[in-house]
Image 1 (spheres, rainbow, N blue to C red):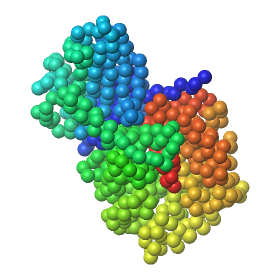
Image 2: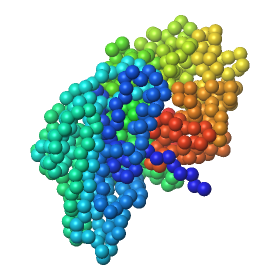
Image 3: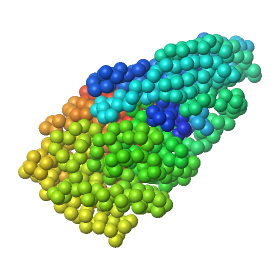
Length: 610
């Protein structure tokens, strides 16, 4: 029996506006950046109750409501037709098909020029086709800031007044959220009655369309505004939609001849399109990389680095998509070093799209990832101007980090890479990452102290993290050791590939044996068992990625193939990867949107070393 893939809303976008499209072609949410709140949704999403913000189970339950592919939104329904399927046109644009007697309709949803297009085309298919068709339009939407419901809440944002006002003006429906402030526009539409109240606000109407030459078209366009909208733009026509669609397809073309396997090529392209269309957000002339455009549209330097690995690897290819990848990577470096604020002198745990710190906790690895990204952009990803523009900033951060070390040669950190509290101050994989960054710095600044400091750090890691059992501890205070390994700690799996140790290093191998054993609290046994995290209990796709990397290091072909097979088995019907899944069924448990694992896997398939 063929395993049915789990469903989720499908994603479209263009870096200015993005949307999640449900199983029937309904637009569940339209979303994009906001200069005060970071992110806004035009959706039917319920409000998250503020008094549940520190309740992890309430957070996860709320997120599941946002993941529903059958949820309400904006729907165009041709009377007498039923949905029969959905697919990606040329792997890029969602198309939905509806059929009935002597009639068929297809809808395309895509973003172009900062606008979201919903284009419905009804065509006669038999001699009994009608002269006219009736289309029902239903809208259940409200405009609100993102809820940012986090399992480990850091610094909550102020509560915003949820009131929405809906009016009809100049052929457009206009939503206004005065408490943000923000506006959204849907057009062209017939007059509707004004409303005011908490979101979502619901409206609906019927239309009759004449089939001319056996075909009728209906085009709707959605826009998001952070200022009063300009309603004077021309009303979009079917010809406008056709031209925008053709341009959207053109911008998503690429050449990836090294990937001969069509399944691998399709996987890589899907991850790249998700990053560029839904997660790479334009902020002026910079680019913020959010790991998730729906549930938690924040930027972590850690997640963004692995997305940057995919952008860097894809940017070395040919075609418009590769050009977009290069531009997004250059824009992200600009965002890291020119937009993201560091009020304490250090990068925060997570960020709103416009560069304000959302959660201020100090995490060691998130200080090193931007430095590594700047170096690798110049050395590995053919962006030499990155070092000219940001090399001085990167060297300054690295120098201050060296000065911050304890006399034992290590750095304390406040939290794990899973955003959880750390009971012991020194965290292993963050130090492996620091070592790698120091080695890379030596390549662009050979006169600096980086090679010498890398050697000192490697010796300190070996001395301080080595346990009496002959493995590496997850964390230590110099005398106590924490026996644990987590799916988020990818640098340890990469250690042989990066040159920190050999693949037959006894301590490294012992650590990985422990990681995939019942003794590790982060391992979850079962038919779909694997490495996960206590942050969200269950195997994680990042754990499968670690199995893949470790298998490649040890030349364990069955392990590599098994990890890739697992990623395919648990992937959603659009090819994207969840955060964690059930060890007994393989069904997703947490976060239908999570760009990091898919981006890192795709980068590896393109030959990147992470």
